[in-house]
Length: 313
Image 1 (cartoon, one colour):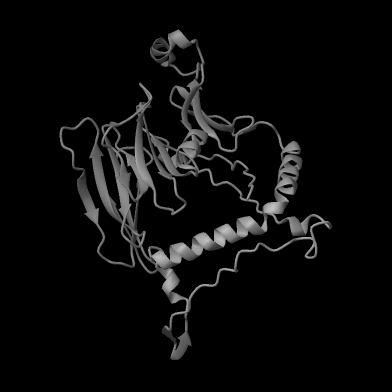
Image 2 (cartoon, one colour; image 1 turned 90 degrees about the vertical axis):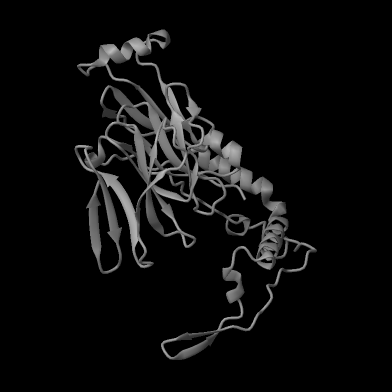
């Protein structure tokens, strides 16, 4: 199914100015059926695929809710690792593709019409932080944005930064992260959160390449453009840089995707294992981290439906 993506507004949180934070790019997904747009594609003109309609199996299961006993024969489908569930899901996807196969030309026509009414350049206003201007835009002909920066001349300390970039000329654009490259690598991409270190030398971000909402931490060295070795961590939710940019704090979720642990990763450290900082044992509480406005401290926030606690490191 063809999709259309629109770039969301890029915003900054002034309270974490020391650690560059952007609102994750969450594309607006438009899914359309040819039956809704063309009188020629009515029920009589569409030949149903010869494939049998996928019907999931029914397994007896009862659930008690407020004194009532309910039958839920499809409860087994909650286990996404069940081979029978994955087999049924693949059958449904294959059936849907076969059902819509005769509308591909119409889908391409509709997408072309929609794109023709959209601006060729979708971008966000630049945000100044230190000697840099950070911004996002969607390159022409692409579906995903790129995160960029360029040197700002009006800062008092711009000369020392300019010397590092003299070969490329003043104000040249740096592409820090290209969603399109990630999409080509994984086939799908969703960047959860993204933080630039206070010294502007590292970019930490989380990426989901499967659609499972399970994010992997990556750290990119902006001085050489390479991913930091041994820095990848699965199940990461939130990020916060230490003030000296030598350490990155992050939260990790449990098997239920509840962020419950905080770790500290020290860059260029001889120790491979990250240092555990905090563990929340109450299953009703989620943990989040951020930095204070002046960047001096990291706050660990433990929140539930009825309580809220905050620790400072």
